[in-house]
Amino acid sequence: MNRVLYACSTNAGKLREFALAAREFDRTNYAVEPLPGLKEMRAPEENGVTFKENACLKALYFSEFTGELVFSDDSGIEVDALGGAPGVYSARFAGPDATDTENNNLLLERLAGSFNRIARFVCVIALARSGQVIETFQGTVEGEILRELRGKNGFGYDPLFLYPPLGKSFAEIGAKEKLAVSHRGHALRKLFTFSAAR
Image (cartoon, rainbow, N blue to C red; front, side):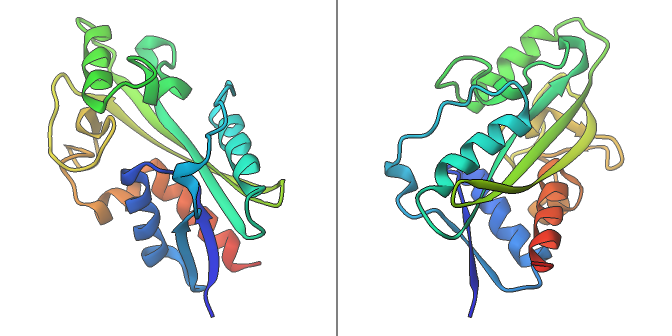
C-alpha cells in the first residue's frame, strides 16, 4: 500500500515536477498528491526573509490539515548584479499577481546594460507532519541570465536562465533533463532519499 506525501502547492509547473520526481527518485512507493482541498484554503502569508523560512511556515501551516506527511517548497532566482534579488520575492517581483512574462520583463529591464549576468536558482523544501517540521532540503544551480527569452518549456524564469554546462536555457531542455540538474531536482532527490529511510 502506497504511503501518501502531500504537496502543498497550486503551481501547475511545480506539481508536474513533483510528480516527475516521484517517478524518477522515489523507491518506496510514496503517492505524491496535492493536499486535498488546498485550493479552497487560505494560504499563509509568506513573510520569511529566506527560502527556508517561507518553506517551513507553509509546511507547518498546511500540516495542520492532515495527519499525513506534507511538503512545501519555496524557490526563486538570485541575481548577483541585483544584490541577490528578486530572491524570496521571485514570484511577485513585478507585483502581487505578476505573471511570468511580467516578472521576466522586469528582470531584463533591471539588468539592461549589465555585464554581470551571474545568477542561481535556489529551492528549499520543508517536510512536516502535524505542526512539526521534520527536515528541510536545499538545492541550488548556478547559471546566467540571458538577454532575451529562449525556449518554450518550463515556467517562471526558465526562459532566461542559461545553464552553462548544456549551453541552453532551462526552457530549452526537456523535463527529465531539467530535473536532473535543477535546484528543485536536487532538493526533491534529497527529500525522497530521506523519506525512503523512514
